[in-house]
Picture (cartoon, rainbow, N blue to C red):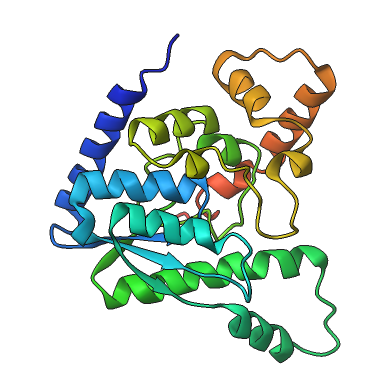
Length: 244
Protein backbone atom coordinates (compact mmCIF):
# COMPACT_ATOMS: atom_id res chain seq x y z
CA UNK A 1 0.00 0.00 0.00
CA UNK A 2 1.38 3.38 -1.00
CA UNK A 3 1.86 5.92 1.77
CA UNK A 4 0.00 9.16 1.03
CA UNK A 5 2.24 11.65 2.84
CA UNK A 6 0.12 14.69 1.95
CA UNK A 7 -3.09 13.11 3.27
CA UNK A 8 -1.47 11.85 6.48
CA UNK A 9 0.23 15.22 7.03
CA UNK A 10 -3.11 17.02 6.70
CA UNK A 11 -4.80 14.56 9.05
CA UNK A 12 -2.00 14.96 11.61
CA UNK A 13 -2.26 18.76 11.45
CA UNK A 14 -6.01 18.50 12.05
CA UNK A 15 -5.36 16.11 14.96
CA UNK A 16 -2.94 18.60 16.59
CA UNK A 17 -5.50 21.40 16.23
CA UNK A 18 -8.16 19.19 17.82
CA UNK A 19 -5.81 18.25 20.68
CA UNK A 20 -5.21 21.91 21.50
CA UNK A 21 -8.89 22.73 21.13
CA UNK A 22 -9.64 20.16 23.82
CA UNK A 23 -6.51 20.52 25.95
CA UNK A 24 -5.62 24.20 25.91
CA UNK A 25 -7.18 26.52 23.34
CA UNK A 26 -4.66 29.28 23.96
CA UNK A 27 -1.66 27.10 24.77
CA UNK A 28 1.63 26.93 22.90
CA UNK A 29 3.39 23.86 21.54
CA UNK A 30 6.83 23.43 23.12
CA UNK A 31 9.27 21.33 21.10
CA UNK A 32 12.78 20.24 22.00
CA UNK A 33 14.88 21.04 18.93
CA UNK A 34 17.88 18.81 18.20
CA UNK A 35 18.30 19.60 14.52
CA UNK A 36 17.31 16.09 13.47
CA UNK A 37 14.38 15.02 11.31
CA UNK A 38 12.02 14.15 14.15
CA UNK A 39 12.11 17.44 16.02
CA UNK A 40 12.12 19.27 12.67
CA UNK A 41 9.00 17.52 11.38
CA UNK A 42 7.23 17.75 14.74
CA UNK A 43 7.87 21.49 14.96
CA UNK A 44 6.79 22.04 11.36
CA UNK A 45 3.55 20.11 11.93
CA UNK A 46 2.83 22.27 14.98
CA UNK A 47 3.52 25.44 13.02
CA UNK A 48 1.08 24.41 10.29
CA UNK A 49 -1.51 23.47 12.89
CA UNK A 50 -1.19 26.43 15.26
CA UNK A 51 0.84 29.12 13.53
CA UNK A 52 4.47 30.05 14.15
CA UNK A 53 3.51 32.42 16.98
CA UNK A 54 2.25 29.49 19.08
CA UNK A 55 5.27 27.19 18.69
CA UNK A 56 8.33 27.51 20.93
CA UNK A 57 11.55 25.65 20.24
CA UNK A 58 14.00 24.75 23.00
CA UNK A 59 17.60 24.02 22.04
CA UNK A 60 19.40 22.04 24.76
CA UNK A 61 23.06 21.41 23.93
CA UNK A 62 25.29 19.70 26.46
CA UNK A 63 28.35 21.89 26.25
CA UNK A 64 29.42 22.14 22.62
CA UNK A 65 27.02 20.54 20.12
CA UNK A 66 28.76 19.95 16.80
CA UNK A 67 25.54 20.13 14.77
CA UNK A 68 23.76 22.94 16.64
CA UNK A 69 23.69 24.86 13.35
CA UNK A 70 21.01 22.42 12.17
CA UNK A 71 18.80 23.37 15.13
CA UNK A 72 19.24 27.06 14.33
CA UNK A 73 18.51 26.35 10.68
CA UNK A 74 15.16 24.85 11.69
CA UNK A 75 13.97 27.59 14.05
CA UNK A 76 14.99 30.25 11.54
CA UNK A 77 13.31 28.38 8.67
CA UNK A 78 10.06 28.10 10.64
CA UNK A 79 10.33 31.56 12.17
CA UNK A 80 9.54 30.36 15.68
CA UNK A 81 10.56 31.77 19.04
CA UNK A 82 13.26 29.72 20.68
CA UNK A 83 15.28 29.42 23.86
CA UNK A 84 18.75 27.95 24.31
CA UNK A 85 19.38 26.10 27.57
CA UNK A 86 22.79 24.48 27.93
CA UNK A 87 22.36 21.46 30.21
CA UNK A 88 26.08 20.76 30.73
CA UNK A 89 26.30 22.29 34.23
CA UNK A 90 23.04 20.62 35.33
CA UNK A 91 24.28 17.20 34.25
CA UNK A 92 27.63 17.71 35.95
CA UNK A 93 26.07 19.09 39.14
CA UNK A 94 23.65 16.20 39.51
CA UNK A 95 26.36 13.64 38.73
CA UNK A 96 28.65 15.23 41.32
CA UNK A 97 25.85 15.29 43.92
CA UNK A 98 25.28 11.55 43.81
CA UNK A 99 26.88 9.48 46.59
CA UNK A 100 30.57 8.94 45.97
CA UNK A 101 30.24 5.22 46.65
CA UNK A 102 27.65 4.89 43.89
CA UNK A 103 29.36 4.04 40.63
CA UNK A 104 27.18 5.23 37.76
CA UNK A 105 26.82 2.76 34.93
CA UNK A 106 27.44 3.82 31.35
CA UNK A 107 23.71 3.52 30.68
CA UNK A 108 22.91 5.80 33.63
CA UNK A 109 25.32 8.42 32.32
CA UNK A 110 23.86 8.18 28.81
CA UNK A 111 20.25 8.50 29.94
CA UNK A 112 20.72 11.33 32.42
CA UNK A 113 20.95 14.14 29.79
CA UNK A 114 17.67 13.23 28.01
CA UNK A 115 15.87 13.15 31.35
CA UNK A 116 17.28 16.57 32.26
CA UNK A 117 16.22 17.83 28.83
CA UNK A 118 12.66 16.68 29.50
CA UNK A 119 12.69 18.46 32.88
CA UNK A 120 13.89 21.55 31.02
CA UNK A 121 11.09 21.28 28.47
CA UNK A 122 8.48 21.08 31.20
CA UNK A 123 10.02 24.02 33.07
CA UNK A 124 9.72 26.09 29.88
CA UNK A 125 6.29 24.72 29.04
CA UNK A 126 4.75 25.42 32.44
CA UNK A 127 6.21 28.93 32.35
CA UNK A 128 4.78 29.86 28.94
CA UNK A 129 1.37 28.21 28.90
CA UNK A 130 2.64 25.28 26.89
CA UNK A 131 2.09 21.66 25.99
CA UNK A 132 5.18 19.52 25.38
CA UNK A 133 5.36 17.81 22.01
CA UNK A 134 6.75 14.28 22.00
CA UNK A 135 9.00 13.75 18.97
CA UNK A 136 9.35 9.95 18.92
CA UNK A 137 8.44 7.90 15.87
CA UNK A 138 7.08 4.35 15.52
CA UNK A 139 10.38 2.86 14.35
CA UNK A 140 12.29 4.06 17.41
CA UNK A 141 9.47 3.13 19.76
CA UNK A 142 9.24 -0.34 18.19
CA UNK A 143 12.75 -1.25 19.29
CA UNK A 144 12.87 0.86 22.45
CA UNK A 145 15.22 3.47 21.03
CA UNK A 146 14.30 6.19 23.50
CA UNK A 147 14.93 7.08 27.12
CA UNK A 148 12.11 6.32 29.51
CA UNK A 149 10.97 9.55 31.19
CA UNK A 150 13.27 11.38 28.78
CA UNK A 151 12.48 11.80 25.09
CA UNK A 152 9.82 9.07 25.34
CA UNK A 153 7.28 11.34 27.06
CA UNK A 154 5.31 14.51 26.37
CA UNK A 155 1.76 15.84 26.35
CA UNK A 156 0.92 14.90 22.76
CA UNK A 157 2.62 12.73 20.15
CA UNK A 158 2.06 13.46 16.47
CA UNK A 159 4.45 10.86 15.05
CA UNK A 160 4.47 7.82 17.33
CA UNK A 161 2.45 5.84 14.76
CA UNK A 162 4.62 6.87 11.82
CA UNK A 163 7.79 5.08 10.74
CA UNK A 164 11.07 6.87 10.02
CA UNK A 165 10.44 6.44 6.28
CA UNK A 166 6.99 8.02 6.62
CA UNK A 167 8.22 10.86 8.83
CA UNK A 168 10.84 11.74 6.21
CA UNK A 169 8.23 11.76 3.44
CA UNK A 170 6.06 14.11 5.50
CA UNK A 171 9.09 16.32 6.13
CA UNK A 172 9.55 16.76 2.40
CA UNK A 173 5.84 17.52 1.93
CA UNK A 174 6.16 20.18 4.64
CA UNK A 175 8.91 21.83 2.61
CA UNK A 176 11.64 21.42 5.21
CA UNK A 177 15.25 21.78 4.07
CA UNK A 178 16.51 18.43 2.77
CA UNK A 179 19.57 18.53 5.03
CA UNK A 180 17.24 18.38 8.05
CA UNK A 181 14.95 15.65 6.75
CA UNK A 182 17.76 13.43 5.45
CA UNK A 183 20.23 14.10 8.28
CA UNK A 184 21.85 10.89 9.53
CA UNK A 185 20.20 10.17 12.89
CA UNK A 186 22.64 10.15 15.79
CA UNK A 187 21.44 9.26 19.28
CA UNK A 188 23.24 12.16 20.96
CA UNK A 189 24.29 9.83 23.77
CA UNK A 190 27.31 7.85 22.65
CA UNK A 191 28.18 9.53 19.35
CA UNK A 192 27.21 6.67 17.05
CA UNK A 193 24.48 6.73 14.44
CA UNK A 194 21.19 5.05 15.31
CA UNK A 195 21.74 2.35 12.71
CA UNK A 196 25.26 1.59 13.96
CA UNK A 197 23.85 1.05 17.44
CA UNK A 198 20.83 -0.96 16.33
CA UNK A 199 22.49 -3.37 13.92
CA UNK A 200 19.99 -2.84 11.10
CA UNK A 201 18.77 0.05 8.98
CA UNK A 202 15.56 1.99 9.49
CA UNK A 203 14.58 1.07 5.94
CA UNK A 204 14.74 -2.62 6.86
CA UNK A 205 12.92 -2.03 10.14
CA UNK A 206 10.15 0.04 8.53
CA UNK A 207 9.39 -2.57 5.90
CA UNK A 208 9.28 -5.23 8.61
CA UNK A 209 6.92 -3.14 10.76
CA UNK A 210 4.51 -2.48 7.90
CA UNK A 211 4.67 -5.81 6.03
CA UNK A 212 6.20 -8.35 8.39
CA UNK A 213 8.84 -9.08 5.74
CA UNK A 214 12.61 -9.09 6.29
CA UNK A 215 15.21 -11.11 4.39
CA UNK A 216 17.85 -11.38 7.12
CA UNK A 217 16.81 -13.87 9.82
CA UNK A 218 19.49 -12.61 12.20
CA UNK A 219 18.25 -9.02 11.95
CA UNK A 220 14.67 -10.24 12.40
CA UNK A 221 15.70 -11.92 15.64
CA UNK A 222 17.39 -8.71 16.86
CA UNK A 223 14.34 -6.59 16.07
CA UNK A 224 11.94 -9.06 17.69
CA UNK A 225 14.05 -9.29 20.83
CA UNK A 226 14.35 -5.50 21.15
CA UNK A 227 10.62 -5.06 20.56
CA UNK A 228 9.64 -7.54 23.27
CA UNK A 229 12.23 -6.34 25.78
CA UNK A 230 11.23 -2.68 25.41
CA UNK A 231 7.44 -2.89 25.33
CA UNK A 232 7.38 -1.71 28.96
CA UNK A 233 8.50 1.75 27.80
CA UNK A 234 5.21 2.19 25.95
CA UNK A 235 2.97 1.03 28.77
CA UNK A 236 1.60 2.88 31.78
CA UNK A 237 3.39 2.27 35.04
CA UNK A 238 2.07 -0.96 36.62
CA UNK A 239 -0.16 -0.17 39.57
CA UNK A 240 -1.51 -2.36 42.32
CA UNK A 241 -5.31 -2.41 42.42
CA UNK A 242 -6.70 -3.41 45.82
CA UNK A 243 -9.81 -5.55 45.92
CA UNK A 244 -12.64 -4.16 48.06
